[in-house]
Image (cartoon, rainbow, N blue to C red):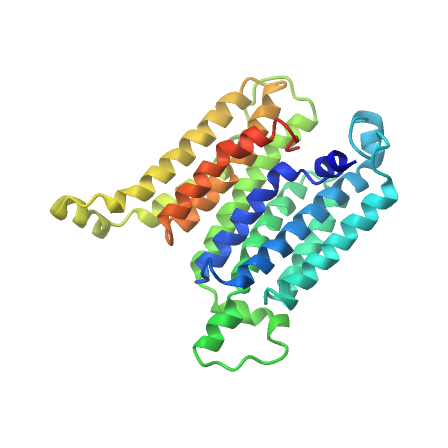
Amino acid sequence: MIRAWLELARISNLPTVWTNVTAGWLLAGGGLGNPLLLWMLAAGSLLYTGGMILNDAADVGFDREHRQERPIPSGRVSTAAAWAVGLGMLALGWWLSFRYAGANAVVAMGLVVLILFYDFYHKPWAGAVFVMGACRSFLLILAASAWLPVRLFSEGHLICPGFLFHLDSLCNLSGMIFLQALALGAYIVGLTMVARLEAKGASSPIAKLWLARLLLSSPGILAGLLLFDAGRMRPVLILADFTPLIPWVIIGVFALWVLFALRVMRQGGPAIGRAVGLLLAGIPIVDALAVSQVSLPLAFGFIALAPALRLWQRWIAAT
């Protein structure tokens, strides 16, 4: 019974939600020791898990015909229970995000709407891949918004009672957060494009997925552009201080991970599923690119999480 629910939740992907949330929180200026981060992690976990459970609940008709081993069509979890638990988790995650974590309630509701839209329309509408990417972008922005009330209050600003329900408060977030959210969303869109090939049972090498390749590469491209600053090279050339070059190591790791996944994908057939698993496990590396601006040790911790997730996928499938 427990394993069936873990399969429904795609629990092996849950740590990628934690790195998304942590990245957004840190980029906004939050500290790892703040208890609000724990509330935000809990809210993000509930939103993700609820969305994954509802994904199977909405797909039950398709799964009964094509994927009878899934928890609902196999009878291990009832459809009613999946709907009740999934919707309950979404509602609780939304409430926790603004009531206890202090995140923007409108962004949280927007994330819930995106999750539900994707769950219901990802099968009939190919454009739903962009909705999936938007879900992760909104999650990062949601986490960043949770630090806003704390920061503004510490700066002496008055926080009105309806502050968490006003989108204009997001203007206080830096543009860098939205750029990182966009890059994360682009990576997820590219990943989802590849995952659709797995679902369709594609059996030939992928020759026309240039857009997916570009989207998957976008976090590394953004990180490289942000680091391409001649001033950063002065400590290297004058003082032999190689610290400014460390973020380039993270970009290199990201590039190698994505290139390896794409190489696996080109084999076609069952190899596409392995490529999807690699790309899902690589989400913490995307977040490592973002947090390298704030904490290099944490960035390398995120990188170390990627192979651990790949191993976890052997126990609970990521898709």
